[in-house]
Length: 418
Image (cartoon, rainbow, N blue to C red; front, top):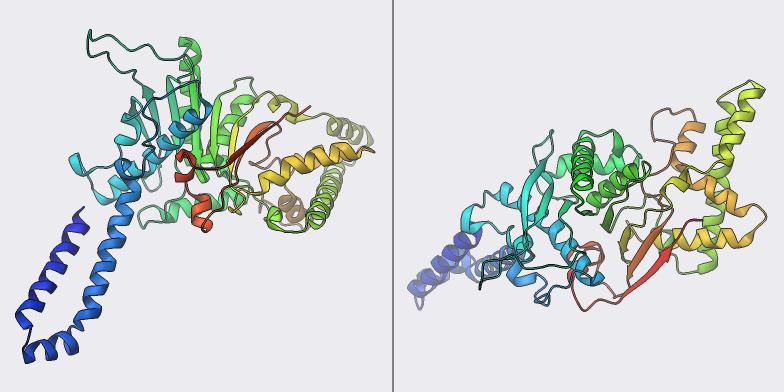
């Protein structure tokens, strides 16, 4: 808002100066030679436009889901829209903090108040003190006639924990990029930000279970990776949380963007064979005693992913987003390997439990470069929602805004791990 005011004053000054200098030699000398008035005015107009566009994307009244005038909590599309807006709310809370927008200038609260939520706690990073997440509590609206609470569908969550993704702004970009690198190295679980997030998720999951209320977790981009890892951690203990993951990063070359289907399939099959082979070799090298080798081989036949098979998160991806598009091929390839037979399914299951990059580094003797064990993005079961609407560019394909719009071509499939 303040930037817009300064820009408007600057343009006003330029226009007044143009009037004063009209039909005089001063205009020619100063406006054209010194100020280059036409170019300066054009630059100021562009500056004002860019500033307002940035604010417009954060203003709920301008780009929020205005079509959700009658919210149906049993409608999965409505659930998706709400979850995406709550994530956007965390983005804007941090932007409000960075730009010192307070009171009526703050833009964040409509992103949750429109759906009758209250932000009860900010999750703050201990390194740069940025707000990376938040805990919302659902507050059903009051009936104006008799001041009673409006009855809401049981599908509505009592609490929602939301995590934002990377913000490319000076106050947060350094720490966010550092965490992005941890995701690439499969080391997100070792970061203090994830520990803070995991503590919040565990606490709210325990509280919700004891009170019989429901809990959602949701996130976008890096925040989706954190939500996925937190959900997997609890799922391994038998606690399953409803999850909405938007554009979660899949650490892999974007094979899905290769046009030739046979080439894509060949690359994935080769990758599975190499990964499974390196995993088996590493396991056998960890011990030299035959009895321990037999134990390790027996452990390889066990499937740790079965503990996660009952958890079914909603994973939202866009084929135009190379950071998450490989989820499409990941699930399709797993089905292809199962159909091959001749042990191909076992090879794929073994490959899923390890990071190819970590195994290669380990084989070359580079220790602790990349975690070897199960990558964050690996999930055995999921409901995969693919946005088939053509995107303008990568920024459009990766943006959170697409997930609350009502004009998108969404295709969903359920993949169950057996």
